[in-house]
Length: 121
Image 1: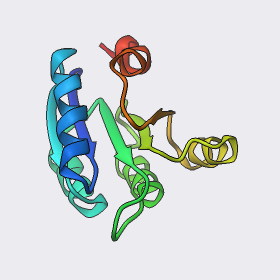
Image 2: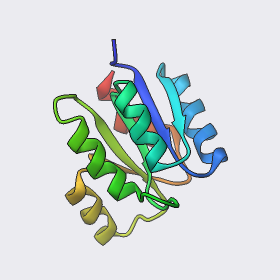
Image 3: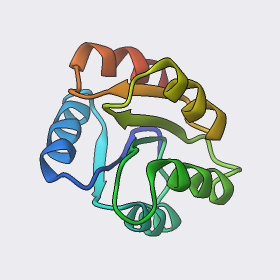
Image 4: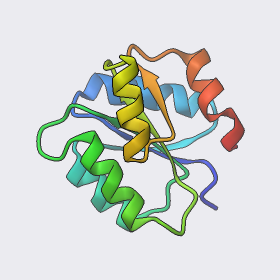
């Protein structure tokens, strides 16, 4: 069952650790990736219901990774959140346009995380 499988993608280990810990407290099984390329590899091997995806990473950006995830997982119900410090209105519109479902602004907040993922359970 893939309903509670999440992937946290961020090039900073502390950000992955914090987001992963909060998701685990909410009952999710969490895998981590340090890059867009690693995220695509994991997504090819596992089904994820939720992906927290950093925008600014070396190699593939979060936006490029989101587009690739959407192309590779078209038949699956994957919810992708931009996990970023970039929270300007024009950024939000751009993120939604490339395929993100919503934006989770850093620093992460448990209440906001619950609001964004609570309906996915």
